Length: 138
Image (cartoon, rainbow, N blue to C red):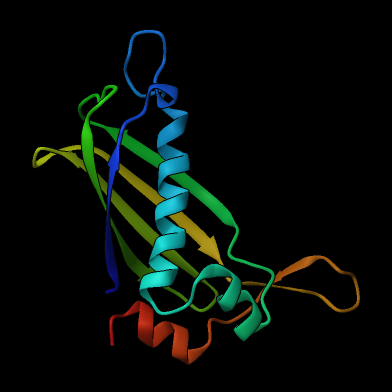
């Protein structure tokens, strides 16, 4: 499956008054890493939207497992992998590590969507075979 790794330094603004990452910020990190995963597939987000005529890939489920804290100044590595692909949705797993130690596991489910031409509302749509192939690392 498609995988991408991003290196990042924990900044002061990422942290709470105790100097550790304020937990909602991990979800922001993971969202950015998913965008970088699209680029690793060969389609920056704006190109993917244009090429496939989609509205985007909204998040419908997310969770995280916190194993060890990260603090201001830490250098971390976030590895993101397409973990599962279904007809119109896919899962992404994120592993945030510091000095080789797994600190946070994040999980996302996203849905491939288009705007319904009649209602203008978002509607799930099957993932194109070309996208499925890239997400599978083919």
